Every structure is written in C-alpha cells, then in structure tokens.
Image 1: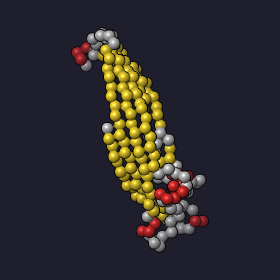
Image 2: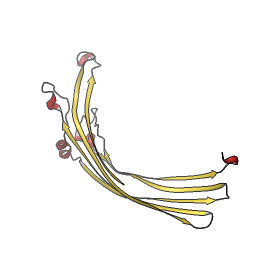
Image 3: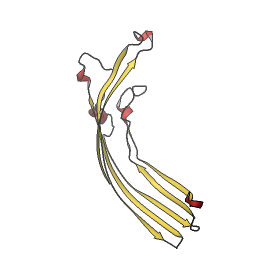
Image 4: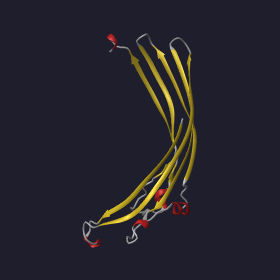
Length: 178
C-alpha cells in the first residue's frame, strides 16, 4: 500500500463583536489569515495466513507494517491586506522556534489473530483480536481562545495511537437460506 497525499487549506478566523464595550455590536474583524500545507506519505506491507487446524477449525494470523511521514507548513497571508491589522499570526518559523516539530515519522507493526469453528454445516463461531495504529499529527486549526491565542502551544503535535479490538460472533445459514 502506498499513499502520497498533499493538502492545502486556507484558514481565516473572523470574530463578531457581541459586546457594546468592544465597539459596534455586530462588527467583524479578522483575527488570523494563513495557509496550511500538510503532507502524508505512507507505505505499508501486509500478509495473512490461514491454517486449517482440523476439518472444523480455521486459524488466521495476519501481520502489517506501516511507516508514515507527515509534515506541516504555515504561511501567513497578512500581506494580502496591507491596511488590516491581524490580531494573531502564525508561520512555520514560529512553530519551529516554539518547539513544535513540523515533521513526524511513525512506524508500527499491527497484527490480527482469528479463529472460526464450524459447529455444523449451518452454524459457525468466530472470534478475532486485531491491533490498529494511527500515526500522530497536529491540530491544524489552532485556537484563538485562551490560553493559546494562536501561539505555537496551540499547534503542538499529538502522539501516535494504538488500539486492540476484539470480536466474537455466530454465523448461520437460516432455513430457506434467508
């Protein structure tokens, strides 16, 4: 499996004044204007084997390795409005200076173990345990609310996630194959 995905998103945060003390009620102002480019490159290989332990018991084992590289870049668009004062601004350089990694790499093995047991020609039991993996990333939108106010803290990377799922079930062929 191979994935090479590149996205470009233009964000503008606009606020509407709701308090007379802050100026005309209903007035709007631009808080931040930026372009985000993020890229994900993912490479995975997987395989699965079935083993007939008996004429009724089928065992399955699967293994997958996934490696992902991610990057994120921000460009301020404040130059598009020379007469507009932006309340906040963010750039890739500010993220790096603030200790935010702009490139991430994660690789993991995940596996699947399953069993199917035929009770008879019409009924069987199944069970499986499967691990999953999702690489880390960033909160790409950041936040204009306290305590962040579009500082690099708002854009900190989050770690990869893993999980296990467990399933059990019964399958049957009902009368008249319904």
